[in-house]
Length: 77
Image (cartoon, rainbow, N blue to C red):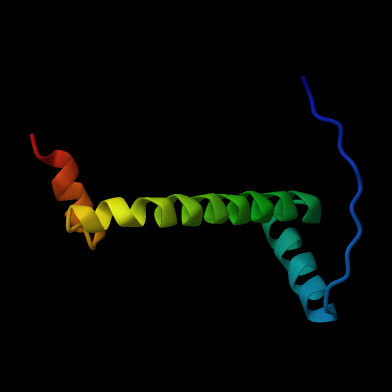
């Protein structure tokens, strides 16, 4: 089922508008499409940040400080 779209209005600096216009033209995409992608990335970043914060005490318990530490831990039998 296709989602219905709504219009959202917000203000930005003229430079942001010009950059967005240029980016949309360069990529052959709509400004709305670029905004939707930006928002998805923003939400992902927020969710990832919360997950990392929740995992921090567990990682500390196992001495996991880097991504490499986590990868080694997960590959251990």
